[in-house]
Length: 171
Image 1 (tube, rainbow, N blue to C red):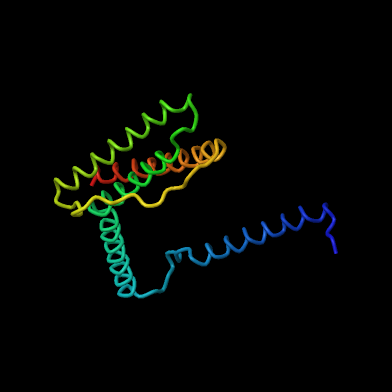
Image 2: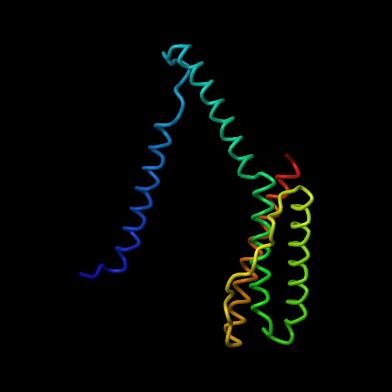
C-alpha cells in the first residue's frame, strides 16, 4: 500500500528525532560522574594510569602508521598509479593536451623525487614498480569522463599527501 506523500516527511522527521534522542541518551550515559562520586581513589588512579597507557599506545601506533618508510612507499605507489592513469588520457582533446602534459610531467617529477629520497634513506625496493593494466578509453566521451574522475581523485590524493607531509614535517 502506497504511503501518501504528506506522511513521508513526518515519518522521516520522527525517525530523525528518534536517532537524535538515542544518540543523546548514549552520550548522557557516557558522561563522567559528578564530584560526589563514591568511587575509591585507588580505582580512579588505576583508571587514569590505564588511560595514559592507552593514549601512549595509540600515539605509538599512529607514529608507526605514519612512518617515513610506509608513507614514502605508499606515496610513490599512488603517484605511479596516477602517472599511468594520466597517460591513459592522452588525446583527450587538443585544448587540454598541454595541461595534461604539464600535469603528467609534474606527477612524474614528484614520483622521482620521492623515489630518490627513498633511495637516499635506503628504503627503496630493489626494483621500481611496473605499471599494471590501465583503462583503455576508446571514445572522446570516455576520455573526458575518465579525465574528470582521474583529476578529482588525484586532487583528493594530493590533499591527503599534503596533510601527511605536514605531519611528518612537524614530528
